[in-house]
Amino acid sequence: MIIQIEKLKLCTPNNFKLINFLLYILFFNIYVPNHLNDFLFTTDSLYEQGEYKKTFILLSDEYEKSSNDVRIAFRYARSIFMLANTEKNIQKQNELYYYGLAKAQEALLLDTNNAYSNFWYASYLGKIGQIEGFEKSILNSYKMKEYATKAIKLDPDFSPSYHMMGRWHYELSSLNFFEKIFAETIYGELPNSSYDSAVSFFEKALEIEPKNIRYNFWLAKVLSATNDSEKAISLHKRIVNLEPRDIEEAEIISKSKKIIRENER
Image (cartoon, rainbow, N blue to C red; front, top):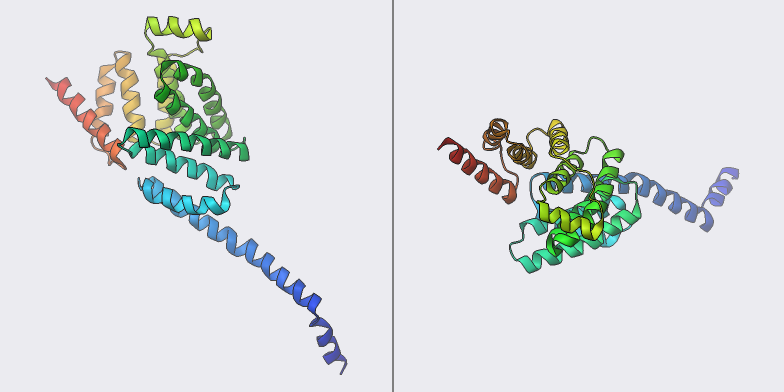
């Protein structure tokens, strides 16, 4: 009789509420993280395969539900950037870049110490500079370097940040005399840059990811600019034997083949 009474006491409405709450907590802490981790793994795999449209579609749906999660937010900004890269219509492409810039900024505001949020925001700054012209490009270059440098400090093994800094040094070092005078007249002294620094950053990116077609191509580009054509050609020969992940990489391979043919004449 005592046991039955104790059972009845356990089955009170308040206890049912407590049990339901505990079950919810258990579900939230076990199923939801696993579901999210599986989702992130899927989107990252599709991204690595160059399936940018599929990645964008998946993340668009998830972003509506989890826009305050930096892991979703920076991946969403990344998917927009890569989708824009494949867009042939210039107007639509630019619209995607500006939309992505806003989303990258939102991701950065969620966590200013997230390496990938810093990197993708820097990427958009560089792209917007290209769209709006020389003055904007120079102005954004200061901020771009700041965020890319921070991304490297936050994740020293993230190769795209080194590649970005290599391109930053290359682009600034490639300015002609009149462009430098114009930029210095408007913005004051330009940041220090050099082809040697570009080479160092590109090599660091390749050290982490040696089969990356973009990294190999840009290192070859800066080596050509420093008249080290032998090493540049060897990199182009390496590129043509790599497997492209997307249209842009396929185009790079075509460029490398053309450079090799011209060198053999």
